[in-house]
Length: 281
Image (tube, rainbow, N blue to C red):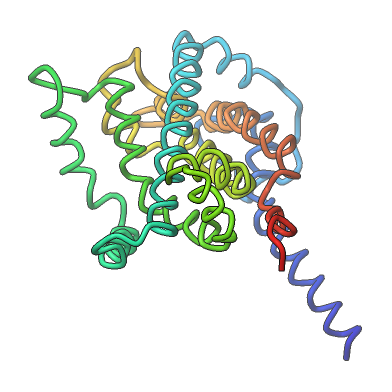
């Protein structure tokens, strides 16, 4: 029975890996093909030819350098601001006993249950009302960054609160005994110990911001000099027909930074036990 359970476990892992890898493999194989605006039926899982014409076409797009630059700026600024605000918010909910804390945290949880697309119209109107009329922050990187940061605070706070609560309170009390306040305890003690969880959150934030399309299309869609990579990739799709190898090639190129990021930082995902031994039993 033990061997049978182990075999079933590995079978589930293998089937799951195939299910997740198959779409990416299909996209990679068909990026070397040349279609007459129609995908093959049945789909090709092995390339019938090796041609880099689609990659050459994507790399020759005049909007690619600007879109890549915009994506890098928006992703880095959004991640930095989001992680800092979320860490401070999580620390407040985990370590500071203020009036209405649990009620406010439940409001955060309720906000997580709402589908993101329901808020795009009021978010658009708010951004339009900030700044110079008539468009305000619509069509600007600042507007999109503000939208990303505001929309991610609730989920990111929920993600970090548990790790903040698990840290020994004796460390915080020792800082207070030495005359330090909450900011000293956060930046000098809690933040360094919570870095694994914060690093994991930063990686997820980087990936989510880099790949986000819907909000970027709504906020930046009309400003061609501000568009991000996902919006540029969508612009390769024709109004009546689409060269799918162009879409596949552009998608593969856009995924390379994220693949490198995970390959380099996979060992820095959540690591527990950093606070063990910091206080006497």
